Amino acid sequence: MASKLNYITIGLILLTTFCMCSCTKYNYVDGGTANGIHDCSMWEYFESHPTDWDSTMIMIEHAGLKSIFEGKGGYDQISFFGVTSLSIVHFILDHNQELDDLKDYYDEEVDESEYWHRVTDIPVETCARILKDLIITKRLMLEEVPEGYRTQEDLTYEESGGMVVPTLGHSLFIWTYWEDYGGVEKAGGHQLWIAKQGDGNTDWRVASTNIQTNNGVVHALGYDLQLINF
Image (cartoon, rainbow, N blue to C red):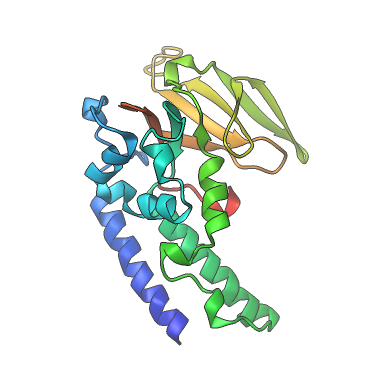
């Protein structure tokens, strides 16, 4: 019963956050990109936009990685594929739903302590793994990423064009794609996509690109990012 009540609480937070963000279109993250250059550290940028980044900051501090986003410890310039607060709330809900499914459909015993009710309930190593897989130790702008694509054939994936970039965790395949507009080829939006290297990993579109700070660039991932599958 306690877990169900916590679901309601988290669900209300999720609904509130969604409503606050619903004015954006096409999963666009309103990261202050009307003025895409911010004269502050990346951490200070997050602080000035709590709607999208409050849970992200908690996750970063919980993982012990705050100094990276402040430009300290040898990390003068980074690029961060930013996971937003709404995606983190989804991650918590998805985790708890998996535990409920184990109980309800497989009759497995699940200890109440295994449920997550706040960001700091997520294991430190899980937070660190997620974040490190999204941090590149250099400044990388959308315009520097080549066009490419990633296609699936049976259970394998083929990467073409684009670029492979090492992260603090593993590596990402990233690529761009130009949309057509009004019947004109490549006259539409300039999209940025990422995927963890390896078969079975999902492609994710970046919602807002080139959010520049003094110590790096944020490319905000969409609200639909499913960390449980990342």
